[in-house]
Image: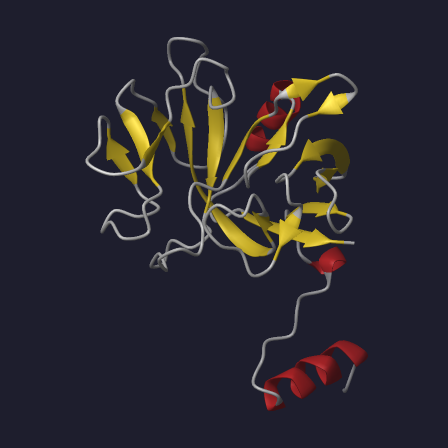
Length: 201
């Protein structure tokens, strides 16, 4: 029996692309959406909707290192990292790791460790993960540009704690952020292989 969905998939296959799944049929998908150029949007998961922030340049595709945009697309959530000196281990079906004061994330496109966790101090450019502002007290690593990393296509894309400013949530440098209580709720609902879709509306 030919359905509208199968016809779309067949047409896409002939064109050499994969048809995007229908959102309502993708169980457990985290959906992040924002208007073009906007720095705030919504995150929908398990029947709930939460406010979130995205990059200062909005959601971008393609994305490049330093452009201030959050990458558009569908990605896996790789792992959770948290500050054991500030909180207990969060609940989640994702792998969970304790952060260390020497954790960094390489953002030098010419370095072999580009878009990987590294030990600080590091020989080239790397972002400090042990932050004083609390934004990385707990985070999930979004699997963008990591299989393998393509130089200059963007690095250090996380789902992390939001910076709160007057009137709402402050923009990120390319991540997705939420209030910590909402973030912990979302992480608690994540299962192994959890996927996140980021798109403009």
